[in-house]
Length: 339
Ligand code: NAD
Ligand code: DAU
Image (tube, rainbow, N blue to C red; front, side, top):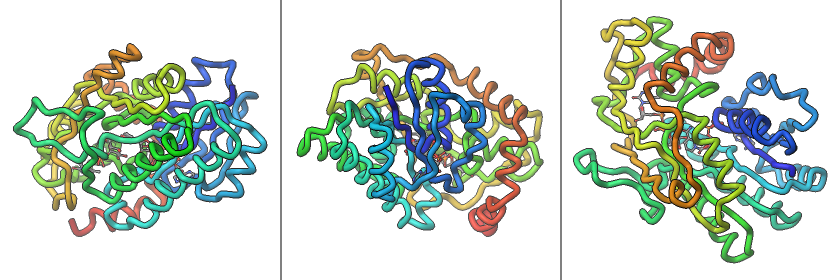
């Protein structure tokens, strides 16, 4: 079987490729990635020479090139990770989010219709459900929770999800969608909370906590997300949506304090900065459906996963130091300079 993975040079896509090549060595993986600021070919260096792996640098919005790739590879499945993924950037510049996340998804699904596909899988997010109040711990996102987005990023992801379901109903495209909570683990770009705090901590730089740091996210180790997607594409039911999460809600400030403790740094590094516009208060996934129907359960608990993650960033300084020494410096100045 040939599996086309988009966005495989990014955080979750690369972890998914490593998992698939290990778990299903009989399959061929083709990775399609534009290598935006968030994509990094060096992440894939361990698999680039494998005979059952091919990397193609291309934009998912480039229709002719995508069709050409389908013509060449005739993929059996598409697992679509490629996206603009950072909420803060979507607040500064929404346009590219609409282009990549909505139009790019349409191009991929058109290619699937034209050339035929056994399964198209959309990697979506819990952010499409909006947020939950802090004082109602009984409330969780289920697959029936109405879409209610807050940021240009989450709106673009919700737009794509609606389009995916429309292609299923109108054209009979064999689709599935997964909506996962916040991921952490190796190869996450250091603009996101956990790797940013680790990198700043190690450089004794201030740790910029938005607002009061009370916002809650539901953290899942990236490999558990990859395992869930692998189950969905092979055993999930066409036309179905699956929420993925590990019941691991934590306030941002507690995550930051934990990282400081693990790295032996003082809490005086914490700096409270102006809040994110439209900042979602709390995310919390109910993963009952994927557990009941596909037997998925998270395997890496947070206490272990965060230690592994911090150790990975300590052992792989070259990977992230190269990233933060380039264009990232301008990004950081603009995003945090006057905050
Ligand atoms: P990422 O930003 O680390 O990686 C995105 C990848 O997509 C990069 O390699 C980039 O080069 C590529 N890309 C971007 N635009 C492209 C285009 N036009 N054509 C081809 N490639 C393009 O993102 P991530 O955190 O790995 O997220 C992957 C997917 O998972 C996204 O769809 C995101 O919405 C979803 N998701 C992320 C999380 C999370 O916590 N990170 C949680 C749930 C869902
Ligand atoms: O829930 C899934 C989503 O999780 C994915 O769909 C997104 O692609 C992914 O980026 C992530 O979105 P968040 O906005 O939750 O992640 P981020 O790491 O940007 O922020 C996590 C929390 O930490 C959020 O409440 C904002 C806060 N934060 C973030 C940064 C970067 C800070 O307080 N300071 C920071 O510097």
